[in-house]
Image (cartoon, rainbow, N blue to C red):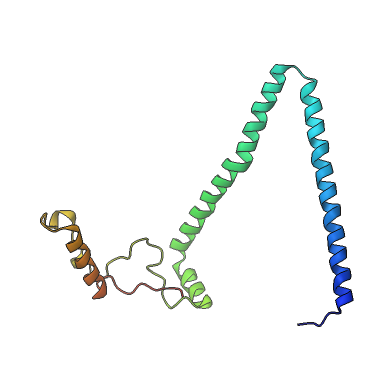
Amino acid sequence: FVKVDEEDMSRVIRRWRCRDRVLWVSSVSYITFCLMFVTSFLANVNPKDVRDWEISATIEICTDLILVPSFMTFLFLAVTGISARCWKDVVEESAEHIGCGDSVEHQFSIVPRPSRPRSHRSRSQIKSTETLPALLRKMESEAKSGIFGKVPSCG
């Protein structure tokens, strides 16, 4: 750490506080001017134009604040998912680089894939007499015995 003189530090803090006040005063002044401008505009046009302006402003705000960010989020998620599936070697190299382990083959699925498909039972193969707790205990023992394979963890 750098040793700073108490007087220098108080001078820097005073300068910061002065800049903060200037920023707040200018921001509040600008917002007040905008409100006055829009209010005077709406007071001097006919009611039909006011309604049209309100509808237009509402659509624009919804588009800017909801639709565009949602679309961009889904687009980036799709591109990232497709990229991760197509270039697994890049994903594995990146995982090694940041220290997540040697293999990340199972990290892109929500449910771990079984390493031995013969242990997987379909719904028709499950006996109707088996209760949910019994099924959960059976699945837990299968998971402990390593049927699902090793799922890498990043931590």
